[in-house]
Length: 387
Ligand code: NAD
Ligand code: MG
Image (cartoon, rainbow, N blue to C red):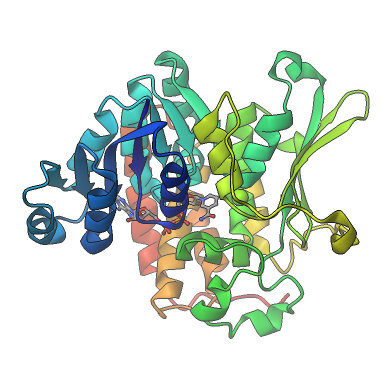
């Protein structure tokens, strides 16, 4: 029996992970589950899976969760530190599926134990990539990428011939506004932005897909996971989301991983690794698909992608600032406080406002993250240049 923990079990990736665990109940023993504030859903999951402990980040729900799990023998705790404690429990495999930089400390807690970490939480690599990867090395943790593009690359990347990899090519769906004019994007609502054409995901990553900041975060994520310079990481828009990404070698060969857009396939890859599990995703029907198409990303209409690519080249604190500002801007957009086009404008403004020194410790990173959140939170009436 493999002992597993799911950080962010109530989210989209968390629920898909539980779906797979339910299909393989005799292979996995659940050690801990964590959530932000949805104690009702966490209690239901805990009753079904009988973990040793559950942790709720938001202490407000502690009493209700404790009452709901009374008599089950499950340890109930709350607060940010409790989520880290859950990550420290001795699970062999940890799904890191908390959204945002909030996932950084708990994910590092699992890494520090030398666990096998299935990494969905891309923001922790964007915010703290060098420090995070150094911890992975130091503690001999195993990192398995869950993000569909990085999982695809991981499946076809020959780590023994790193020098022969000439490019990695990240595919992007283009999101719900792929064909919309910049002027029309000004008025889009949160409901329109979260309605992704191919994938069903949490609100934050859905908005990131609509701005294409998600692909920018993924470029930075790929840089850290595969030790590739920005110049060798290319983005191509592929609206069908069938090819999940590609690796090009020195001899011109390009290897790709394909599948229908269902996160249970990459999650199953990490859950079964190094073996393969049965997963329920619909199978590709190539004759019905007919055609796969590709186009260059439009950096004028999707400036967030360019901001992220530039932040990777700039290095130092730039990706940390970019990530924090984006988290705040997306939350403000979802709350109806700012317009869609202001998301990238706020990220740009925050990057321009703050110094970008090299960051070598977690404390440095957390301090810059906090500073960037303050600037992005206070930004008002930014003019959004026409395309
Ligand atoms: P989600 O919003 O559906 O779920 C987020 C989870 O994190 C929830 O369980 C929530 O309770 C928890 N959480 C939120 N804030 C927290 C906090 N401050 N402290 C502790 N826990 C907190 O998000 P999601 O779509 O499942 O995405 C999770 C991560 O996986 C993100 O980093 C996202 O970029 C990445 N990812 C998601 C998908 C997808 O298909 N959903 C695909 C690729 C990568
Ligand atoms: Mg992705």
